[in-house]
Structures are given as structure tokens and as C-alpha cells.
Length: 311
Image (cartoon, rainbow, N blue to C red; front, side):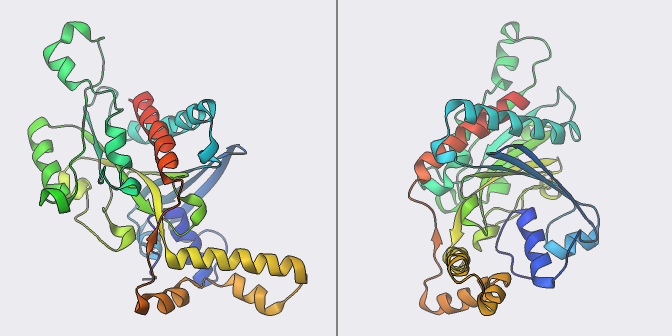
């Protein structure tokens, strides 16, 4: 299988088409796009059979990608609009797997002390949890309120325990009907760093995008549906160089008007060749932008508000 080195289903589909010279839909994959406004765009990718699964290396299921432009300078109103879009898309997926009263456990993966990996734990601090109130103070809860609990289980390096082992213990004891898992992802585009949310109903494999794969968190391992909200926060140096090369070629093309070699070079995906040059010198770093603190804070607000509204 092609080394996609991205967690996003729509990026994997695009890379598969580019590498194989295919146009139009891939057998087993359906997709559609929707522009909400100039800063908000939605792309839905549905993998319907094993052909689609094999092509891009993602399980059969639904993948919704929400792109949010200009997040670094987003105002409160724009953050609110983005959270409403996320909430609607999340509701649609939840309604396919659980009823309006089913108990949900929200899980924030990552390390709160490492900024690009801190989104999950930070979102957990903003979730409106209700399980304890329903259990101990039911007289103060509106009838029909959904039970919601939340946890940030930490990372293997600090706990010594696989995340799926921690979650299995919780699931076996409190019996939620569904998990919502928030985690940082890797992307093949510098544009998407902390500006994209992928919602999927197939679970998640923590660390897969940066080559540090852990045990998957899914219906297979936990026995209940797992909806994943992933946000790209890092890219490889090879991705950065490849994207920068495309931008540089575009600039030269604008100046030179026409150049067959540059046109051919830009049409190809140069990631693997760039990576081969960087890896022997240990230069293929995982990088994140200098504004990552602000981006994480804005994305934290969008994701937390979106989850709270949907529940």
C-alpha cells in the first residue's frame, strides 16, 4: 500500500488518484463537497466496500472533513459558526449509531504538556458532563437529559498503560453506549494544521499518522461504536518541503509563463523522493507552526462547543 502518511480520508483519496493517475470516483468510495461560506467548507467521504478500503487504507465508514480557514484570526462569531457546523455533522453521525438518551463517554487523547498534542485533554475540561448529576442529584436535572461523562486518559509514556486498556476498564464498568474520541492527527498539507476537523464513525488508531501506532480504539476493541474527532496539528518536514516546492514552482510558472519541466514536476507527488533525501540525515522532523498555541485554543473552543451542542 502507498505510504500516505496522513490520517485524513479525503487526502488519502486525492493522493491515491494522483499516484495512480485516476480521475473521478474510486470504486467503493463516494464523496461530496459543500461550501458553507468562504471560510467554511465540508467534504464527505464514504467508503462503501472492501475495494475502497484497500485503495486508501481506511475502514468502511463515513468520514466528514470540515475545513476552517483563517482560524488564527477568527472572531467569536466565526468560532461559533464553525462549532454549529461541527455540531450538525456530529449529530448526523451520532443519530446513526445511538438514540437521543444513550449514555456517551467523551475521551480526550494526548499529552496536555505538549502543545500540538494537547487538544484532547483541553477539550475535556470544557465538556458539559452530566452523569454524576443524574446519578446523585436527579431532582436538578431536566427529564430526558443524556448522561455524558468525560476523561483524558493520558499517554503510554506517562501512564505505562495502553489507552485502549484504560478505556476498556471504564467501558466495562460504566457501560456507555458510544465513545467520542478527540485526538491530534497528521496531515499531508500545511494548510490543514489546526484548521481542519475530521469526524468519522470508524474509531481511531492513535499515533498512526506520525509512525507511532498504538492499539486501535474502535468497536472491534471496545464492543461499542466509536466516533472520532481528529484535528491535524503536525506535518512532516517532507510534507513542508513538498508544499513549499509546489509554491515555489507556481511562482516560477507565473514569472516564466510556461515551463514543461516545472509543470511536470508540480503534477507529481514528490513526497517520497524528498523523504528519502531527508531520512538518512534525521532531518524528517515532525513540525508544527509557531502560532500553534492560538490555533489549539480556537480549535478547542470549536470542538468543545460543537460536542456540547450535539449532545
